[in-house]
Image 1 (cartoon, rainbow, N blue to C red):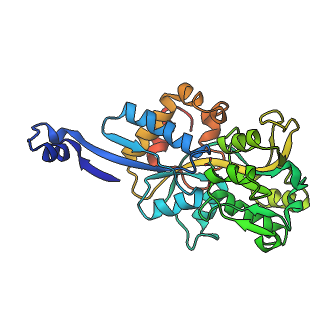
Image 2 (cartoon, helix red, strand yellow; image 1 turned 30 degrees about the vertical axis):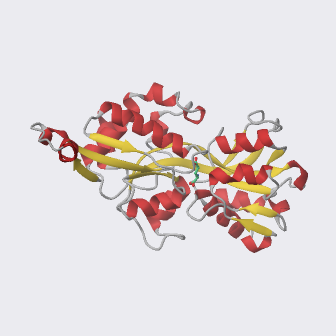
Image 3 (tube, rainbow, N blue to C red; image 1 turned 180 degrees about the horizontal axis):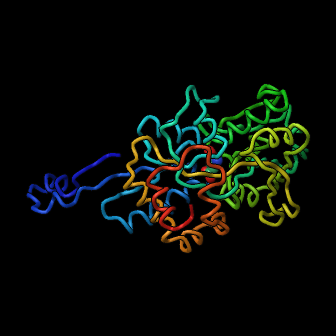
Length: 318
Ligand code: GLU
């Protein structure tokens, strides 16, 4: 957390002395999100909006980032104070499983959010009906640092395959994927993301594209072996040309605090979310069905931050 005496900094710029400067110490908070066409970016913007409105001593901003893995690494490195992280990535970060090199017990959970299905969208002319039809084809596997790249590796491992089984692989950022699909630079894109989201909306409106099932024995085993995965349905009718349900699997989006977060700041952040909860839920359709009891429990392998626990106890939620 970067602390700055805001009035003093301002005073030195304009060359005057601000007598009340000492009263205005502000803590600057940066939230690691994802691409601007995903939902993490909306999560970060929404949380910061309420934090900044409720707490004059906190100044929260939520820039676009590479995604879950980049957010964990950014929190460990001190670049981000908080981050949105897939629940499977949260587990890997806690235990030190690949792609992480060691256990990160200093990261703490604040709450979880909505399901993130592993979403494959293929051009209608690419003849891809199921995940396995992508072998030999041109596939965007996601930028390094993104959650979808990690989920893709997980699925390929589970199937005894690797990215070399695709014909061509691209590593485009989330915000570049839809255009690449429409421009016929790839046959399919992968995105672990809440729905509806801007990328899939953009791709399905600018080209004929189909959501692809990711199911079968290897996926069933993955779900059975890992409590943070579940079968997830992307409901039909959400995107143009996709009237049928799509069966896949996924984890949950979660909100995590970095190692430096104080009890006071964690308390203020979670209270801003839950004191404004009805408004928060209206900020994105993926937030509409959230409920606090599930959010303080589901998908959290890291310990809850003590500042969050304090607020949740006061509410009688634990
Ligand atoms: N789940 C993706 C990731 O971890 C991000 C999805 C989003 O931006 O909404 O990178």
